[in-house]
Length: 328
Figure: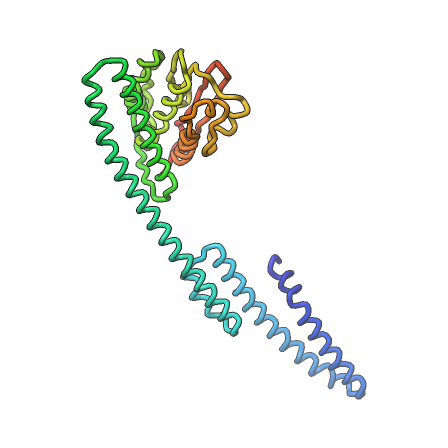
């Protein structure tokens, strides 16, 4: 019905012309006072032939309609071969235009993909290159144990995190990002990130409450580690004094709680938006508004539900629900 009614409305003028011709035909027969059978017989023949032709045209136009709708959805070059049933000169002109537009679209997509791949390759090489001097400086700073060396080590760690964030952001835009799902120990990811951030805990004099969870989850270790590392970094960044608590609630829900400055109630619904920093984020000029956005995007791909609860000047709790099964 979605095609028939608009089709009949489009052909209304043609139908009216056909009715007019039929009326002229009948009136002419009537004026010449021909026998009724002489009128009905040719009229019936014309009606039958008209119905056959109308049905043929309807089927042809309906097939065109289906092909064009499918072409609109897919924009696939393969479907263009089916446009051969467009036989009129105008139809062929449209077919040529469509083929040209599809070719241009295909070329544009190839160029865009190549440019994107080149950019990813460049930043990947850049990240690996920049990590070399960072690792070298960290190695030299570990040979000293002064307040300055600890501060510089912390700054280098943040630089490394920002570099990883750039690469993660670029990879997130790709449809070909590889995810390797397997069963892993949650404690391993937590301990690796705590060990990496231990300098910040010590330097800021923030206590850590953590007990081994003995929980196993099916996920991608690299990407989940990025999320947890980002959440712990946020806790440290926005906690001036107090503590950070890591625990697991049932069922398999990782909770990271801090006693930091908290998040304004009106900002909570938007904390996962790209580029959104909120009231406190504007006070911290280093805030980029990308960290939680990346966490949300990665969690969505890992099948992990992430939620935030917070109160101003009381702290923030982030929950990662890890019990969802992911099939790949």
